[in-house]
Image 1 (tube, rainbow, N blue to C red):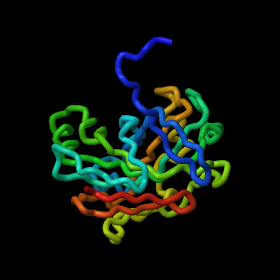
Image 2 (image 1 turned 120 degrees about the horizontal axis):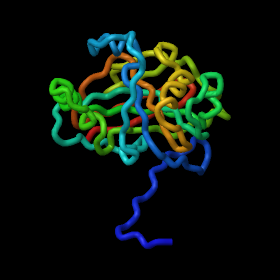
Image 3 (image 1 turned 180 degrees about the horizontal axis):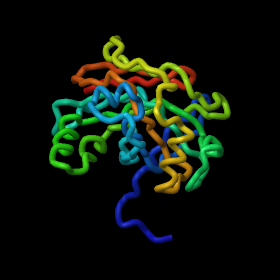
Image 4 (image 1 turned 90 degrees about the horizontal axis):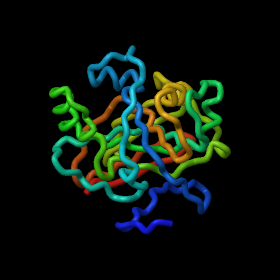
Amino acid sequence: MNESVIPASEPVTLKVQGTDKVFPVRRIHCVGRNYADHIREMGNDERDPPFFFQKPTDAILPSGEAFPYPPLSSDVHHEIELVVAIGKSGSNIEQAAALDHVFGYGVGIDMTRRDLQAQQKEMRRPWEIGKAFDHAAPCSALNPASDIGHPDSGRIWLAVNGDIRQDGDLGQQIWNVRETIWHLSKSVSLEPGDLIMTGTPAGVGSLQRGDVITGGIDGIGEIETRVV
């Protein structure tokens, strides 16, 4: 085995609920604009097909750990999301077989530097800088599908300092989990360890240092972090 010229990075993992096991994270795929009410509040067309972007794997922030307010921004937004954890590889996956590729589910927050994202959109540049930064993907422990099944409905919510800001239902997704896996697997091969963050309902808003964020999805889990 060849010797590494620099120290190797520690693998990024998420806890598996109810066990002492962990899920190694490979990639983080994110679905843009997957709830009609959020599309409307952002002024976009809800008839568009799904599109995808990525966050770096090491953007994962386990639930309970503090979220450091990121540099270069004065308008960081929260976006609560269902997280799908892939446990079986595949490409061009048919909808009928899509759920066979799911290991389990979690609760995530797509942290967004909205001001930087808006600047890049205006300049017609990629807006990765608004989405892919340190600690930009807080995530709960994962609940195996073997324990909870494949929820396609259930409340999804987020509160800041106890005040509810986002309050929707998984059934409001434009593209459900089967369809999302089908679309995404046309362009990239999905592999064990991949996560898919599936979009957010309406109510996204700014965060301030000191805010305590809590959220959850019925039957899947809850998440908490504090902005520092």
